[in-house]
Amino acid sequence: MRPVYWIALIPFVGILAGPVLHNHVHPFILGMPFPLGWVSVWLVITAVLMAVLYALDPANAGE
Amino acid sequence: MNAALPILALFTLLALALGLYARRGHDMGLEGWAVGGRGFGPILVFLLLAGEIYTTFTFLGASGFSYGSGAPAYYIIAYGALAYVLGYFLLPAVWRVGQANKLVSQPDFFVHQYDSPALGVLVAIVDILALIPYLVLQLTGLGIIVSLASYGAIDKAVAIWIGAVIVTLYIVASGVRGSAWTAVVKDIMILAIVVFLGLYLPYHLYGGIGAMFAKINTAKPGFLVFPASGQSIWWFATTVLLTSLGFFMWPHSLGACFTARSANVFRKNAIALPIYQLILLFVYFVGFAAVLSVPGLKGAATNLALFKIVIAQFPPWFVGLVGAVGILTALVPGSLIAMTAATLTARNLYGLARPDAKDDEIVNVAKAFVPVIMLIAVYFTLSGSSTIVSLLLVGYSFVTQLFPALVASFFPQIGVTKQGAFAGIAAGVLMSAWLTFTGQSVGKLMPFLPQAIKDFNVGIIALALNVIIMVAVSAVTARKALQPARS
Image (cartoon, rainbow over all chains, first blue to last red; front, side, top):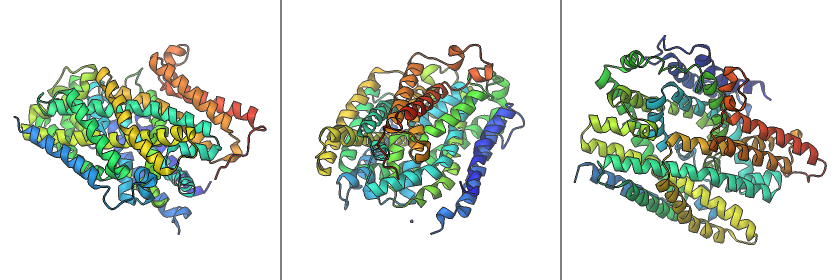
């Protein structure tokens, strides 16, 4: 497996970690209860990570 | 006549016209009908895959689930993002096999990878068993939407029949192109409506999103976080993981993969789709806004939360507009599901019985199966009363069982044989059916376990059994098996 592919594991840990480690309403994130706000922020982080993966992935160089 | 009716009629006719217009200038042989001639670019593939996000499940189910259950609904927004990460790797690999071997259905893929027509039949049967509840879900949603948005002027059953006829007409005429072009209108409209409702209702009723959640937290303490047992954080984590594995196992999602003109389309989409998933937040906001303003909905009635609050807050013409969007969220995925079910019935069941059948014959048989499948779905829709979320979970529990064998097919060194793949899928689906229809949970089956494990999604048991059986049977049959034709 190419080392760059390990980036794809980060969202799996990130998205689930927030609600599992801090299942409380406060602090609100962007006006939302902590678990929902956490997951929402991680959707954006996931998109950024996938963009980084896409840029670094040799499979995309040259169909 | 109220102001909602002409708007509902206008958009229904627009969907039909777009669906029929989509066939112009295109060959409607098997490849043209089922996979759009493998010529779809990033935007159409994006809409076909994103269409999976915005079905009636989202529109009614996600808002209803957040209204009725609170925090457990968060799983819906989380699993899609992880599924797209998996899709970055999985879909290009599936696409390459499909492109090289002219595959048009999900069972085709299994037949090719394991060199086993019998496995194709099993996968086709599993697919149909999963697709029918999913189609019933769309028609159930359609009936609710039209009945409510027309202020009761159109009966649920009449709406369901009209929807079934429209889907049948444009799928028979245009195949996957009909779904793709109607999806363009649907997604533009749903974005506008959902974002507007998700912002307007919390600000209008509560003074803001934060203020809304603060008031809900005061009125219903604990509603916005996961309960200590049952649908706890461990249920959330395991449900997110399980459903992300099943996301692209839906035959219409994997079928949409064959429409792309390059593998890169999927990798680009994996960047954009998690952001698109954020629109679901606004659906949640509508459901949460309804918690204190239209209280008292229970069970299957929670599906009505979005429309109850819209009817309470807006004039009939706007209710008609929201209803029109709702109709499209049922028709577009419904058409894709019906087309997929018809294609794999014709290709992988009829085609097996008549191996010398040409593509033209297969596509005609597939078109003939569309009304049959719609009739079956209408029958179950009119005779059932399940909540929208429970219908989806039944289908998900079945298609997720295809994941281990599909992934194993790309790694010949693991040594999974066609017998192992067949036995694993069969055992997993039978276990899923038993767990689902007897209402089992990990806690009921193994009450001696710690609470956290008792809360695991029960689908884990079926998937674990699937993998164990797949590996064990493969080990026994490995030496006897023919070399698979994997690529």
